Image 1 (cartoon, helix red, strand yellow):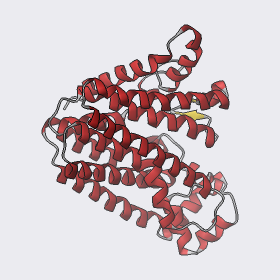
Image 2 (cartoon, one colour):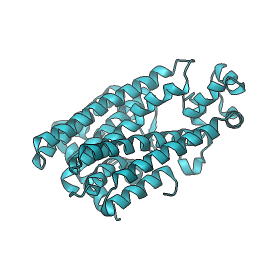
Image 3 (tube, helix red, strand yellow):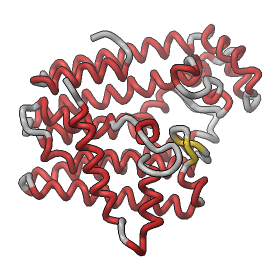
Length: 333
């Protein structure tokens, strides 16, 4: 299936939503948002915008339920605006200077302005979801908005856990799941659920799509954690040293800490230096960090694909959902 029409219309809808600030007295503010969205400034273009996976999943799910996807475009824009609001704030909280190879908003305009940019994107996501009232009954709009708002709370809860975990030394594998359920899985789950609602699915099918998005998010994050330590820098686009050097509480690390062996001893001594990374990564792998995390990744991937099969998505959009899932999780159907 050619997804270019979906992506083209998603971009137009996002631009329409962000254009609320395209006024003489807020022109610089508008420029800050268009810069973050990847449309303007040095390095603007497809690499800077990201893949728009989340809005695409809203539209493909709606279409796979047997309805026209175009009326769902405001919801697709809403979830992408939520995603980008979280990215702007995450960059400040994580002190990250780069996003998709470009200076982050806070680096260019300062943290106070960047906080305001994130706030504006959040407000626009709420305005976008309400735009559904032009083509959907009030009850459907309210349900989609409720899902989105609950998801935003899940996102902030996941981020709270992530930040609060940084100073803890007693974390276990079971502490990992609530964090990534909020940070990663919640929005993907909401995309599929909102798409199902707008596609006219019954509650049972809506729940199956929610489950699909949830496990897709978990599988994706576990794979990202594995790549963050043992990935090929040429493929991932980021240094495999970064997660260990940054002391990230990823799944492989928590598995290793649970063994209470040499990796745990070294981790307890303080920050890992870049020159140690290869040795520490090999140590962690030898103690089960890689193998056990890979097993979990395969398990979560299977659960995502099985949920999608149970949802029984129809037509070319259904085929595209399977293709997208396999592409994201890098495995055969």
